[in-house]
Image (cartoon, rainbow, N blue to C red):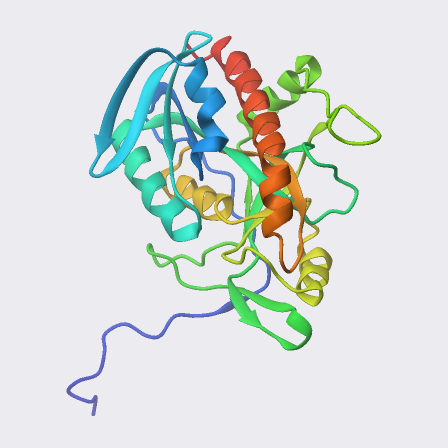
Length: 283
C-alpha cells in the first residue's frame, strides 16, 4: 500500500560524466539585433562608446543601452559579477529583446600558462567547472543533474557554429593593440579556445591543476558558463570573448587590478570587429 504522503515524482537521476550540450537550432522569431553583455562596466565601455543613436532603458531595475554598431542593432547590459547575477540579467534581457545572438565580452584569468596579458580567447566551448561533487585532491566528480525541463544539464556548451564561423573571419582582419607596457612588447593573439566558469575568484594550485587536467581550459572566469546555459535553453546563439588578465592563482586581486584594463580593451576591440563582421550578413 502506497504511503498517503508519497511524492508523485521520483528523485532525480544523476548522470555521471562531463556532458556536452547538443547543438540546437535557434528559436524562431529572433530579432535582428545582438545583445552584448559584460560583467563589469569596464568590459563593455568601448562597445557602449561605439553605439550610434543611443537609447537608454531598464528591464526592471537593470539598465540597458541600445544603438547601432556598423549598422547592426546592438543592445548592451552589465550583468554584475558571478554566475547568479549573469544568469538573472541574461534571462531578463534575452526574454525582453529576443536577440539573434548574445556575445559576452570581458576579462578572465589565464589558467593556460602559455597565454599572455591581452591574448583573446573566443569560446569554441564554454563550461562550468564547479558543478559536481568535489573529490579528494580537488578533482571534481562531474555529473548531469536534472534541469528545469526534466533534462540532464550539461557541463560543456559549444559556441554557436555561425558565430564561430564569423569569428574566424573577423580574426583574419582584426588588429589588436600593441602591448607596449610589457617587456618585451608583443601583439596579443586572438584565437578560438575553451573558457571555463565558476564562482571562485582565487583558487589553490591543486584545484588549478585538477581543472586543467579535467577540462583543459585556456581562461577561467565567473559568468559565461551560466550565460551559455541560459542561451542554450532559450535557443539563442551564444559566443564568449575574453581577454586574459592575471594568471589564475590563489590571491589574484593586485594582478587583476593591474592587468584587467588592457585585457578588457582587447576583448572589447575584437567584439567590435565581430559585430562589424556580423553586420555584413545580419542587418
